[in-house]
Image 1: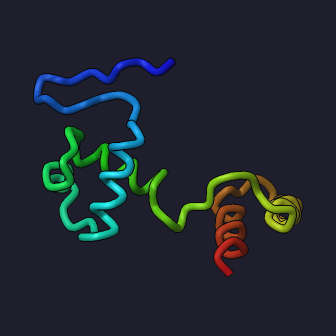
Image 2 (image 1 turned 135 degrees about the vertical axis):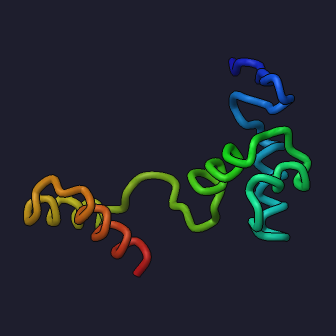
Length: 102
């Protein structure tokens, strides 16, 4: 069971995003782009802050984000890179993203 969203003093919604809100944000950005995160929620018909919309888009809703488990090739790349370079996460991330988008 999901908690009911709360509203802060300015009328901004806080808490978990609903599917309808995700759909509104996705549809608006795909149609018009993201030009001003502060004003975007008002034009998209959302009661969220601009920061909340930006984080939701960047971390969950962007079409180029890969959801799910690593493939066998990605996992092998991670293991091989870690053996060569240790726990240098910047290098690991660089090799992972290069292999995912090439």
